Image (cartoon, rainbow, N blue to C red; front, side, top):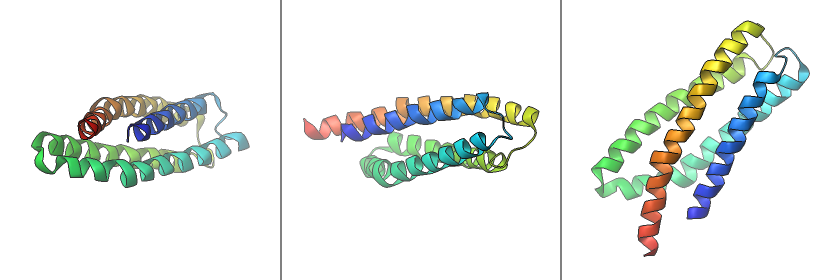
Length: 137
């Protein structure tokens, strides 16, 4: 079970690096189009994995834990909203766009993405690890 968290954390690192790499690209280049499509596919795969492997187990763990239920409800709403914004950003610039608008949008979303990942790892992943350790003990 803990291996799942290690793998998801590694995916987070890879996503942050890939997203950060967009900043140095010329948004009108073919390279940027490929990078954006690759990042979008990786992001969607990661979200699907969390939704299929992590969150169902957490919901089960939260059945008798009101605090965990509230944390999950709050976080999944935030995650859904921010994920949608990220996908819209990637779609918007997948075929290029105004460089200044891209830089502005990128800067804002890069901060949001990094903060979201830190929150998920601190709140959600830690809760999962603690519950998993409790199952083993």
